[in-house]
Image (cartoon, rainbow over all chains, first blue to last red; front, side):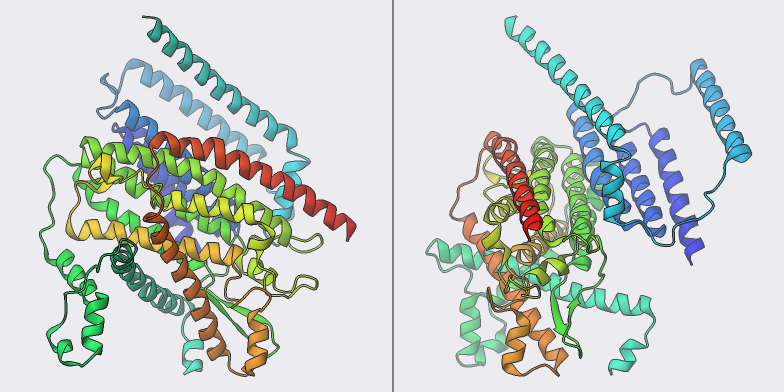
Length: 168
Length: 385
């Protein structure tokens, strides 16, 4: 049963992720992304980590994809990119991606090791909170600041355009 | 009888329980649409629906006419009409998303019910056992996560309709729901700061929140959290109105400027599915509000369920106690739904810019301040005692 569910959700996740890349309609791609996130959340649940699954759903499916859709609708990009989908540069990019993927898989096969002992119970809220506020405090804060800077940049750029329009 | 149910396969048992809960939620959602019309009429000094009657019922003295005046049969007439009238499919829509949007609306609306406790009984040892479909330890987080998916039906419905007003409605939907989700989530954090005591396993469970209000802990005597955290309750309530698209926050379908908002192009059964979903969101939202701040299944503040059971001498009757707790909880939820309708005809609809201002400049700073103050006070109290 568990194996079957794993294959089902893994297949769903990967298939939907491919749908994101292949789809030319931006709304379809966003919906595929949503489906893929649902699959990942289901995989988290199967690993007995309900907390991660629901936080993932809340943040990514409940907010991030909504914002994607919001932007897609505002820009009204329905037809997708008018350029040809496959160009010489696509082949180069695919080659680089394939090389990176192969390197990653090879290094995983060569040096990858599972931790000796797997904790019996899934970590609870306290574990996550303690780690976030001690060991991983700096990365979390730095990532937060990066996002904040990006947001401020967007605000500044869009404001400038607006005032220039007003001057005209 | 009990053994028969206990011996069933867990999957079948879960399915049966789920069906039972849906069989309660779906009629409540239907009856809400009727109650909405009757309450609206009452608040505006009209009679409201009072004509429809099934032929044979007219022969019953008093009762038949009474039910007719109450407009009970209008529910059947409405349901019949929505089922049998033509289901239009405009030519300019994106058919796939147009068809699945009402279905998507139903999924989160009914899934959230699974993790909300709706009653409790006392077992042989006198402990409180909650009645719910899935007692997951993430509790409220699951409700928020699943309920946040409800927005997709509105976005997709508006976008797939491929016309101006529904589209504006769905763009407003995405902005409004994301804005108020922040305040909604932050406003409940003080509650969980309070119930997560040091040295106990961490929890986000709604059952634990009700236990806090059931007088289990000494020096707390069944005090409802609304008296301890009125600001949290107020922010949660306002954000709940915004999240369920109820007036004065129904920017998404505001018929004064958007015809019908996201469901302008919908008709008959598909249209009614959106409303079943909206009322079901209201029911679940009211339920969570009652559990968090108004004592859940405890009848009165300072009078927990266990005390009442003790007075009545019902310790050996778990089924009866369970039924009483469900009735108390449902009564509170129905009052909250009435409150939703009451506010609808009392407060006029906000303008869109006002909605955004209230969300970002009013509720969000207030909820952050509220969180910081309660965090400090709770930390000091825990240090002292």
